[in-house]
Image 1 (cartoon, rainbow, N blue to C red):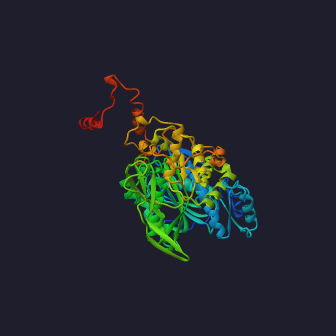
Image 2 (image 1 turned 60 degrees about the horizontal axis):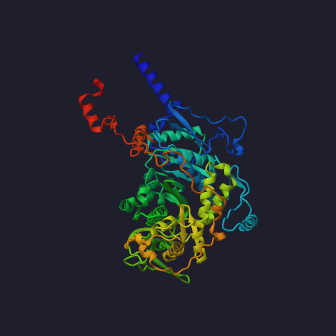
Image 3 (image 1 turned 60 degrees about the vertical axis):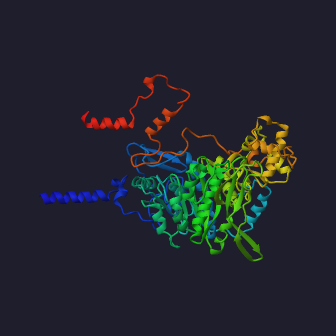
Length: 635
């Protein structure tokens, strides 16, 4: 009788382990190490979720809807785009709602990349709500008709189509190396057409289990597979030419530096690499030595620090790719809120890698007036069909700044070429503006990309009008008048998406200070109060060579500014910046962190004078001693 009972117990336990209900939340702990999935096959039964474009073979009326997972205790549902994500109320998995713009922009870029790649494979992607394509060119609107005619006169359209939510046989393979809840991967599966598989990887067991539940909850298990692996090891294992991914997305908490070496090897030929950096304190100049240890570049504190951060990460990517005879081609690089985001294509070519040295540059920044000069690391000379490479000559500055007499800081090396592929950005802008209901942040994407298309491609870094005025201690000239003065002088000028008051121009610093000297003559400052060693004293005591004209020109106001597009939005919510790292026992913003923030608010304005209210909670040392003398279980 005892043996029969034991056999029945073992049989029930075995059946319970095979039951899908027992694998709702922690089922991934019992499975294998979740190796990178092979090409998944679409399910033979079960219709896609509502709102997708099902294939003709999967739209029979007698099929049932895919099963959805129920909510566990203390669990909430977060909706973004077409995805509905299950989240523990305890924030055991990292999630930041402010980065919806990041995820929307990524879906738009990956969709356009898939459109180009699938067209070469004879497949046409179909995006819900998208009408006839219209190319948006803010620089010259007359090119629209010509490009439309060129598209109509092209070859025949592909017969094979790929819709969102479908598993495309010749589609793209996507890897999200640090997926957390899997929100981004679920949105890829639901909103990006032309995909063959999406691998959502995370080292955390709880995160991997939640990814599997979210894939089942959204009905995308035929496209999305969860993986619990170290991201670097997973990418290193997929370095083979036949195993590489078409798209790799890295959005870590902090620096992506530990994953870049594996990423540039695991992405396919011409593949798309998407990288986010949130360690802006390091990349913006607060810790130059730390920046060098992570990215191989020294950051400096300057007004152009946000664009310099973009160029630092591009330099690091290109340097690591060059080790394996590969090079990068930036498609779109933006500085948004508290992070930067870059989209680059990775190619292979030994001859093109030789150009890498001439694409990098050192930055000489004056600590007094803020003037900067770039020094290329290499020199490339073209003589017919022959290209000669040699060492660059320099430095471009003297021991002291010629404008204010102060010393220079040396930063870099940084990426010295263009940050964007304007033709690709215009295609993304066209798709977003033609289908504004697709993304919740479509207006901001349109404004951001519009500014990107207006930026000068061959002019690295920028100045700010308020900093120029602060240097000479005079009132700030209106932006349009300052831009007009540079245009009257025969120079090019544009704004920058990275800073509201930025000016990108090919005018040398001497011209900028001549414009400020002319402005100071009509808006004089009290020179007797200026110190003889100050930059303002040196600059204003020099007569201008250029006589600036401040008459406002029509072309001084860019179209994105005329159309009042959403370019720089206000803070969306309190504590909208980077969230706390997700720990094993919690994540997001913990209650203790919120309490400490509240204790520090207005501590100088509302000072406590009563000694009894100075500290109403015990310090850590007192708490440890108290718990040692009186253990909690004895009280």
